[in-house]
Length: 232
Image (cartoon, rainbow, N blue to C red; front, side, top):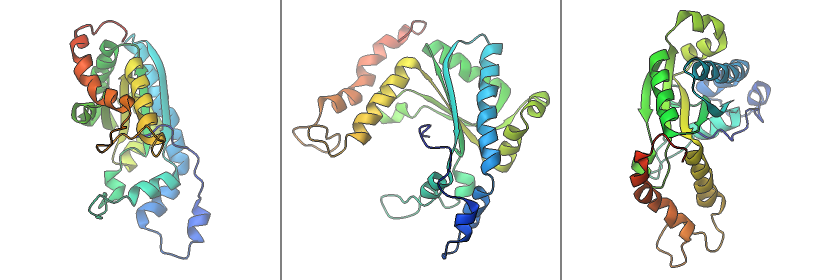
């Protein structure tokens, strides 16, 4: 999930209707739910703020967004390296149409927030991609499909409706330090592509030390994880 994506779409239902090529049903349906998506994005932020306060968790920041129509179309049409579409059923497989991210001050706070979410929502997926990437990335990714409390559902009607209509909502939880690293690594790996001295892949002799430091970060950082109560 990229929370930097624009929430406002550059396209509209009217522009889709004027297209000469047929529009896939899932894209047409998505285009008509823009208002619901925007409201659900606001409500998930409020819901996470409420959970943090109820558990006395100090949060650095909570962000949320709805995926724009352009972004949804682009993602639904993605292909793998073999040329085969990444999503055979985008309507059920894309789970970050609305997404949120909470940044905590310590890993302890992050882990506590995970437990709070497990208690108050139905979590259908929970993974830390950094466990497989080995590039210093450290963020808990959860996908929720329902709220557990009926009273909460009444207070957040758009969020509840979204969870009924869509296959899930992605929430990322990370520490301040992990967020800083993720932003840094993303800028180097993606935004600096093609810049001399910043080759992050392959075996070029001029590969940036910055990129190598990303791959080495888990190895260097692992001994420090015992200090889980301290800011990183």
